[in-house]
Image: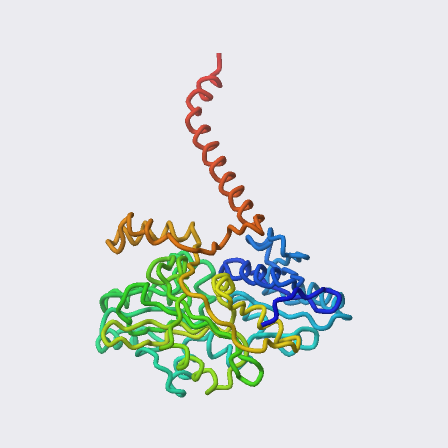
Length: 426
């Protein structure tokens, strides 16, 4: 694998998309590419998140929304013109909303940019969970029992025939990341329901806003039974690099994004997962989510995300820099052989992990001592990095500002009676 910096004069930019409400994956892509000498251009909604403060961002362009296609293309056109000599820049969507933008406008974008995500038909079948069910069943992927109801009567029938608990999740995930659904489902990617009555009640509340949902058999086991295969497939559907990890904790708990993850090689999902992707001619990034079924030890495929991982910082720290592999492949310089994975390193998003710990402890799943003990060993952090302090310092500053505002409101309320007395007419 090439580890030499790539000078901007002879190599095109990497353009990283960062959308509001998306995952933390944008910072991971920025850092993993920047550390390899790739010049990174960030295109973000609004002021951008932590990635906007990274020293590895050479240019930062702000847009109002990825839904405003003319504004996005105006920015992208300028980036393409600036790269005319070096070659087409490489696009890196990092969450479902901006991946959806790239997919919708793929033909137009491909004229000026190199795209490292799958073709439109594959992305559509992966993002739409109802279509993914048919896709997975047609290719004999090991998915749990799944239903795609279209009306309340079908939900009631599922309640009569299914084995509880069940998982209720969006057919189109970006819909649950936007208000008012995001607040209704408490920012969760899925809901666990224990009874037919709870299933019906949850469905009615959600369907009043968006009826596109999927109901799935709940694979028993705690969050630490969740495993992921991260892979990049070249244009001939050959795997150039892959990484496997185990989620130890997620936030929101029981149905969220990994906030404490361990690097571990899992042969039981590597070859079957790669075989699934080769079978359908998959190209580009893929993130396969599995859960180990406590009943028989088998791995059930929960979903395939057609983009880079939200914790690719861990993979890169373990020797598998998937964004860089994708960049090299896109510009015609693929690595010679798949890199080996280092095990035992952990990824920590401390803020979310602290929230997760408090919730797990409330449910009796972990003690304070067990949580503290789990934090030992080599780690890579979501925000803190010795060679890139900007995102961490900006986060500390933002927290300080929030504390200061709360203190100001408290003092204002505390002194209200005195101010009121002083304002009394004489």
